[in-house]
Length: 226
Image 1 (tube, rainbow, N blue to C red):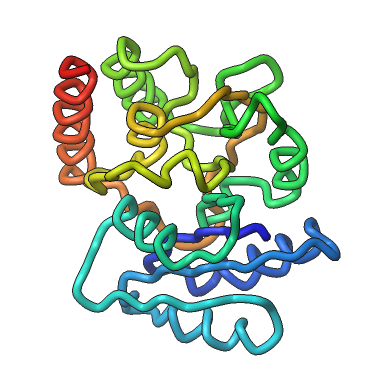
Image 2: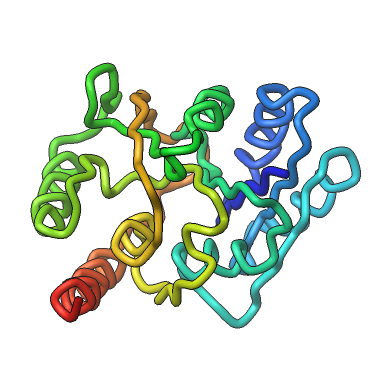
């Protein structure tokens, strides 16, 4: 079965669109959607509970935690599927691409990443400072992995990739943690066009970027200990 992890904070407007789009894209495939919400003031968790009446949506309301990476890891721990997927709730990641990502999970590939940085991929209408921040973040992590889009938040992998791995959910780029600590035979990047959010507002703050730097320091220490 497929378990889709959707971390949320103030995504009450976009979540219904995402869930309906995922259900349409996946058709008859068995799946569950775990909405891990950090007790959103706009009551995204309540919207998720309502969606659960019509779709295979499980709501995890976290009242004592904050952070995208920790939300995703909590989702992993409660997921029932042998294939795990992570997608943002703000519709910047195209739900219709998910079947293609799943098709690329093969005997020699057990981690598939939706990538903006391979031929055919890209970003639509991003301001220059967002491009600069993304570029800087990638350059800082480049010595850690050959994967191009390590900042992607849209990916699919077999559960065994992290089955014997201790993830430290700091920052917001949990994929980078999985790339450094996970056990996988192969990785593939599939192109997609990143869209700026149409609903809600960005959650990026100075503390978010500071957490990413802390995550990098931790992962460099892990890499150099091997």
